[in-house]
Length: 410
Ligand code: PLP
Figure 1: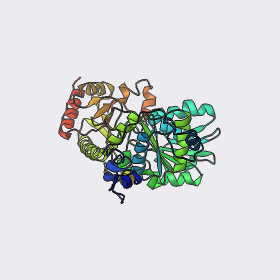
Figure 2: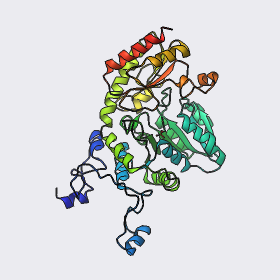
Figure 3: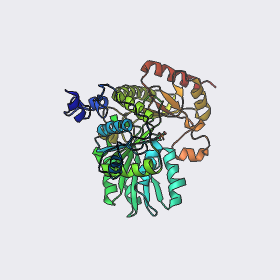
Figure 4: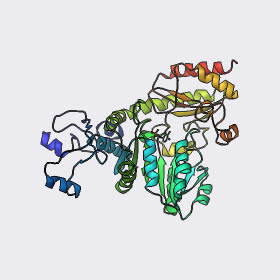
């Protein structure tokens, strides 16, 4: 294909329909038509030159396409946005400085004083805190319900409900919520369904196909995949995405740095490969843990024993993700001994990394929460959350076995 034709085609040699992994490699950031570079350019510039006064005026009037200023548009960031949009089957995507900026934008774009948000009890703690400590000050009401109970959802919905918030699979107990059923309930009162799909990544779940209005991701996690770049993204119709961009990026300044956009695009190209391996490892480890008498309970959507396994099997694709939670027998002292004993699994928060990361909520993220409150949230003293990486599964199992052995030896 001649360079001029390639330029007109946005850098893509092949314009036919592509499957998911082919899109992950090629969509959004094709060959540079000017230089022929295979990799999209990393543009750091915070401002973009005008050719003439008339050019500047035409760009400001929206009569001519242009980049103008880095908080408004950046070509490297747009390449990342285009790739995520394609992978989620969406019209548009907006990249943000972190997952929380996308979450803030998705809520703020839909809410005004007097508006109501319905969210699940099991939810990323910072999202719950955003509603409780910030949106509440602006007159927003919210309720947390058990979203596996659709009758409870229906009872809590009102004419003032603007957003039904759903995080699935959810943190840290891996509860799975029925996206299609929630979309239907949200529509019945004119509310938008927003799904935080971080745990599933765009490889395992496409909430827009199931009726969601907007999808958000902490791109810091599986999308980036290497634990070295913070970022977030909101995906949906052009109108919804523009509303998020307006408040979270243009007004609040939660813009994704171009370097991070470039790294996150690179991460996306191997998302399928990484998730295939991570979720196969996770399934194998979940099965072995479930069969082990030193473990009280395992939470993994891919296990037949998971209370929402049939919902997960219907709405997740190509496996059930990298996150496994399990409860060790022996309470807090045994939990601490096991946590100290890991040698291959890395003691860290975060998830979706190449490395297997393990967190012990009772001695870390939920340490300051009173024990009774922790128990009510389903976080027992022996609960571990493991984000399974791409290592050899036998090394991961040997490390888990060593830690379970240490837990049993006071
Ligand atoms: N959503 C979920 C499910 C998360 O686990 C996290 C972070 O752990 C976030 C959102 C926030 O993302 P970020 O840390 O990129 O702001």
